[in-house]
Amino acid sequence: MDHDNDSGLLFANLVDFDQLFGHRNDVPGFYRALQEFDQALPTLIDALREDDLLFITADHGNDPTTSSTDHARECVPLLAVGRAVQPSRAGRRRTFSDLGATIAEWLGSPFRGRGESFLSAMTAGKQPVSATKAKTASKRPAIGEHQIVALRERALAVMDRAYAPYSKFKVGAALLARDGSIHEGCNVENAAYPVGICAERGALATAVAHCARKFDAIVIATEAEEPTPPCGMCRQMLESFPPTCSSSVSRDPAAKPVVARRPAAQSLHDGRILSSGR
Image 1 (cartoon, rainbow, N blue to C red):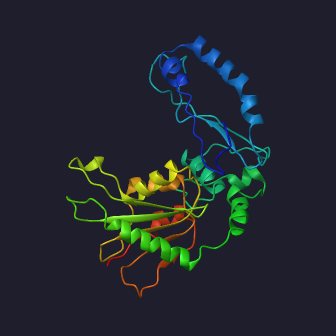
Image 2 (cartoon, rainbow, N blue to C red):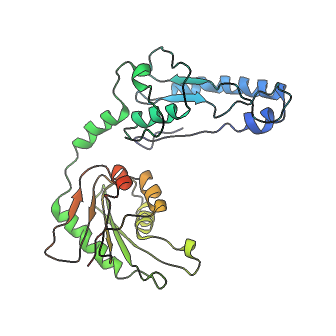
C-alpha cells in the first residue's frame, strides 16, 4: 500500500477465505488463513495515515463448518480502524448499504444510495477527509477565463479531426493538467462499435502517457444542438482523475463558456460536464 494518491478507495477482496476454504468446507485452511491475516494486520494498521479509515467486513457469510458448500446466512463482522475512529458500536445494521454510505461521506461524496451513514457515531465529530482536502484545494489559483477559452479552442479544433464515419457525431476534449499542460482527445470509431474510444478517454490517456496525474479543468465540444454528457465509461475514467472544473462550449465566438466551478466528479453525475452545439 502506497500513498501516491491524495485520496480514494482501496478495495481488497481476500477471496481465498471464500473460494478455497469456505466453499470447500476446509476448516483447518480457514483457520490458517485467519492466522496469516492476523499477523499481517499490524503492518497494515501502521501504514494508515491520519485521514485513513480501514474497514474489515464480508459481503456474505461463509461458515466452513456447515454441511452445505453454499454461502452461510450468519451476520457478517464489521470492524473499523483509524486515528479518527472512537470506540463505539455500530450495532446490527439494517442493510450492508450503510457501510457504503459511511465510506461515501468520509470521501466527501453526496451519494448515500439506500444506506444510512454511521460516520458521526464512529468518529465522534472528526472532520471527513473531504473537509481537509477542501482546505487544500481552496488554496489553488482559480481557473482563469483565458484558460477556459484556450481549452475551448483546443477542444473545438481537435473535434474537427475526429474519426466518426458511423455515428457522424464528432467530439473533442481538452484536459488541463495541474502543471499547465493541455492534452487533447477526439473520438475514434471502429466498425466494431465497443472498440472505439471517446474523446474524453483519449485526452485522459494522452495526459497519463505524459505523466500527468492531476487535472484542473476539462472542456468537451460536440456538434450537437443540445448539451451531451459523457458516456458511462468516460465518467468512470474521469472519476479516477477528477478535474476540479468543467465547461460546456459553443462554436459561437461571442458565446461565453459555461463553467461549472465545482469538483468534476460531482458534475459528472448530474450532467454538468456537457457540450453544446455549433
